[in-house]
Length: 75
Image (cartoon, rainbow, N blue to C red; front, side, top):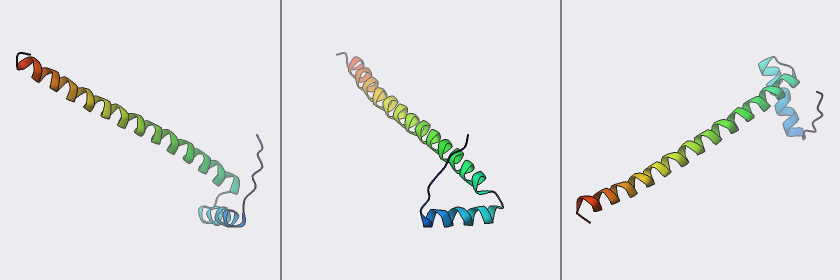
């Protein structure tokens, strides 16, 4: 697939600099950037999901501990 992208001057200079520094074609730098961005988003989603699960588990544990304490006290 061929894609056309319009870049402002600053981004174009950044791309040229990266291309030169990495000794890669501009298209390769762009492909690498897209891959990196997609992986970063996926990792971020997984981290947020893990954090949500941990918070839910902690909340459930507090409720369980409260109920267990109530049962231990003989209701």
